[in-house]
Image (cartoon, rainbow, N blue to C red; front, side, top):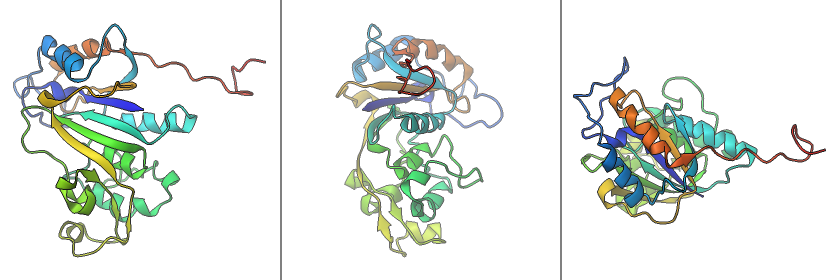
Length: 259
């Protein structure tokens, strides 16, 4: 399955600023015009409003992780799947303490138990790290980060890459001994004790994205902490390319199944 995962803040002219109290102002980051958004969706993503794909709109981007978890549990989504992540941010946890928890604690747990991270600060799931958690769960088999054409300082952490090398173009989480300081991971003074399966990773600017294979599913995150209220007018436009997902097929003996 190929999933298009869009953050509304991708369609801003300037880098969005996080505002924990209220929405950002229009002056800080103006949204694109409707025609430009439609051109990106059709020319760069290969979408067609006449043939909308199943999808869902969420408020905060980490709700996508929760939806994946639920659909996997129901048998509606089978990992590993490919994700094309269209966003101002990579959402791999850079600048947060969470990656240290993932690399030194979460990866020590059985794979089936990794989808339920704790709620404490420094360990909890959030909009800026949910893709790192999904990779730790081995849900993602390939990831493409499509960044805003104006972005230059990409927030992709090298310590999540194979051999700690961004040029490898592959993500490979490395498990370190419990209690390993994050500084030791960064300077490679402590070797990993185990390696997770690696997966292909690409970075491409929005102006250079090629449609590729058709998508099977679309997610759209409003991200109110980053996108100004004026950007919300783009939500109905993007939803023209989406339709509600099909209801789950009842299984024998389950509520609603035929007698």
